[in-house]
Image 1 (cartoon, rainbow, N blue to C red):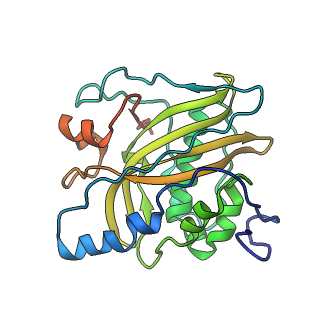
Image 2: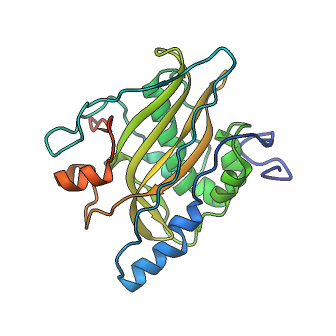
Length: 255
């Protein structure tokens, strides 16, 4: 299944089909349901977990589950600031996002955060979602996952505010210093069609000669911190619920 029938403005080739686990559709979680919640004022739906895809290992490869830092659940004083600097400006680009070229786990996080923000909120993706996806996606991206990205409701403001969120590396395959694939999660406010909810967007990026390629991406619902727009504003209880699990760090806030 091809994502486009002709060449787009960002890349000369179409991606083919592949095998990667599909997550819950963006449109299902953050389309009509978000708009309905915003209009009705009803309580948000109960959290629905979406499986985060596992990096595909080669015949001589192993997948390493990262122990994560910090080693305790994050609280108001324990959420460490990581070394990854987000690039929130990519969400405003009407041109292709730059491919990540840093072959480290931090470089993989930076690439995934940029691709996520660009695919969800950029004018480039709004103008031609298929071409935008072709610009960053691997041949292994599942067609069903690709279609959920193509079907995002772009009738209003879309934005993934990675700069005020947190991230973690769940696992990687290959060498620790130069990984082949890296599994990432980012927790941040996600706005679709003008309605904002906190969400965790997870997925996998794979190293190629051209840089990091997007192999999979899927959102999952999390408990909603009331009226909080930054991870720094969350209470201990809200962080424990929203940033469930180990290894979470805030993005580098240095200018």
